Length: 190
Image (cartoon, rainbow, N blue to C red):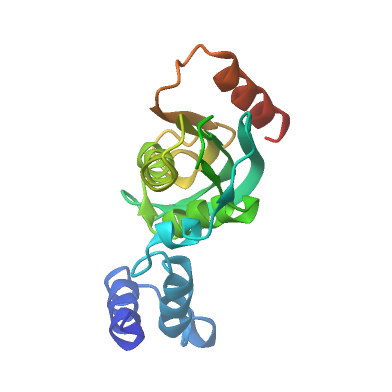
């Protein structure tokens, strides 16, 4: 990221909006540029890299569910914050050679995708698809419940709304007991 160019763009934005708070905003362009560099670290990395190290799955692994993942992201439409919780799950195959990953790796995949400009529906699908493509489980699922700055701070100005989305890949039936278990865990950790 070109931090100097980003700072110049922020300075131009403040000038265009006729904002000048004297000493308080004198270094704002540099601060904002560094903040955006931190917020958008998901570009230039491959989230799938976290799934490279695997371990043999047990013979009947059940469903692996990691819930309560706290995250922040940025709305691709308005550059406003998205904050919430996510649940990531997958069901390894019951075959010889099936593989599992360390639990923290699921949260890392999610964090890499969240550190990009996002749309909540796409975020869940990106995470589930990556798990599906790399681990080849029976299925992967991602549930996200989040508050959006573009709804609470502008437009309809509804500060208490929460959007919940689900992305499901593989051969799971959305009404299966496994998917209901994922939903139950997600609801417990919101």
